[in-house]
Image (cartoon, rainbow over all chains, first blue to last red; front, side, top):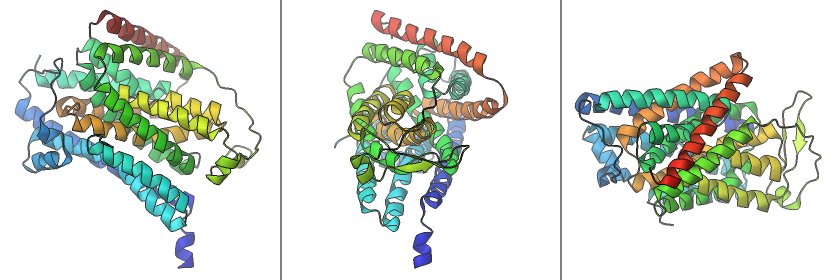
Length: 129
Length: 278
């Protein structure tokens, strides 16, 4: 066990975080690109309405609604799923840091990272702290 | 204009913004919002929502490259992220309450300052290491690689840096930007970290900060997939190209020219906000 814990050095953790970030961003971009293509094929010849602000419908606002929309293969739902993956990437990074600090035996920073994680989760729940 | 043409136009604009943002060090996010609102007439709240996700993408991509070099300080970053994420959520909630004109004016001012700050030369300070008791308890003292071998550094004034980071978070949530400039000030000027450590740690934090506000924007319905998709894909592609070019060409003149363009955009934003035309 001693060998295993010694491997959790800061440098090793940072390398893993680098990989995690790269995979997250690439995956998110791929899903967005796919959803965007489907969106253009289906709605490309309609006219854009981004100069008027109206809030997005609820199935594009909540994580559960987005996943449902993407599974139903709706174009906007697919893009939103990609964006949700992107938002989840830093979240996964912080969650990973919690584990890494715990394995390093750094209790203070486990708490620090948990606080950051809690704020991120609250924000996805609509900013109700 | 149909959606295909509009999407391609937004994508091209985002590509250019990502490119310029990466060359000037401002980040693509702060440049694309004025382009979307001023040139393409997009509602500023949609523009900010779309920009936020592109900020997460570029920051995470760049951070992936930086962490390997051993400059960024994971503990300082994580500790200050408490302040930036709380600020970001507060800023995002504030954005829903104040008028778009006010957002536009604040945006212009911050853009103007960021353009000024990024163009300034920074003297390389030699930090003398007197460990601060609070920073030591928070295990923030560390070393970073220099041409003369590893050098130690000891952060100072943690509470002041923490407060400034809360402010950076508010700006980030309110305007959908990374607030890299304010983050660097907090770490470089206030906490006395080596410049390279400040910039890389700040970049590392931007993604987490932006994710905190993006969550609120998404659940409030301010992120439109049709707009956010071309913005995000364009900014990411543009920053990748910019990062390549940055290492190959002398960018001094390029940066000066882009700096002026950005200053003009900032003044436009303020003017439009004041005249209420956004």
